[in-house]
Length: 359
Ligand code: GLA
Image (cartoon, rainbow, N blue to C red; front, side, top):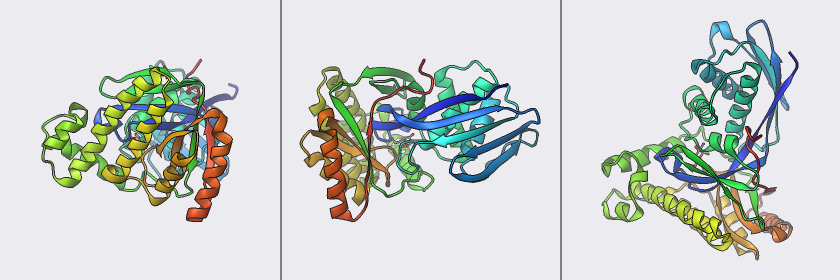
């Protein structure tokens, strides 16, 4: 059999921070950078994985069972394992990955690796599965094999992204809807230069605090309450702030949907900046570097708003800008950030792009 190829994009989370595992709503977009996988079948039952820029190969034997080894290959191996558990007839194969995504930027290189694997493997070993179920299989790889309790946002964005559209994901309804993105606007992703790693304990700690808030309020998930209800609930201060972030984010996502449908970039941007403030004050998942970047970005003419994107605790911000001002704003952010913090920011102008299964 000849070599087959797949491509899975990274994603940028636009609004709805940490809402996915609280049965909430999120707006995101797939971006043009992602991970390529090329591979072919082998008839010895072995899986041989390699990645550009990483020395050596990771090898696993299907007959011996797949186990996590604590390295990058856990993402593809976990995906294979979850595909097999879902009934996919996976045999031996080799695959080479090439990543265009900066690791540690919070642009979901992990999900892109899982999705690129899942799409390649289901091409090599045909298996009928819906796009949403494929996203869930990839998420299970991360939850159960790698051991990160992430929600469904990253995998859904990488699979369902659509060019010039944002992805509206409702995690309670398990529904996904593309919403047109105003053509005069652009997204600048700015990596703070400070690495983000979800395998740290903070993500799971935030998750537990959200679950505790829901439990104390007697509801299955924070999706079931409003910010007003959280404020009136008399929760312990810390848990109350975490819950206020989630309900505020859900409310901002619904407001942003209306703004998007009206082509209103100003309102969308203001909601993004409000989201960042809530990350700083309520969820405490920002860093001084991300705060500086947001502060610098929103001072620029033609920038409608900015916020941290993804899990937080390092990584990148996303700024909503007028396309015609993109170059000027990129330059200003890099030079002011360097002057203020001594760190070199890296700017990636991004376009809402097609997901891995786009026709
Ligand atoms: C990470 C996780 C997602 C989501 C975001 C925060 O990207 O992988 O599932 O929880 O953080 O919104």
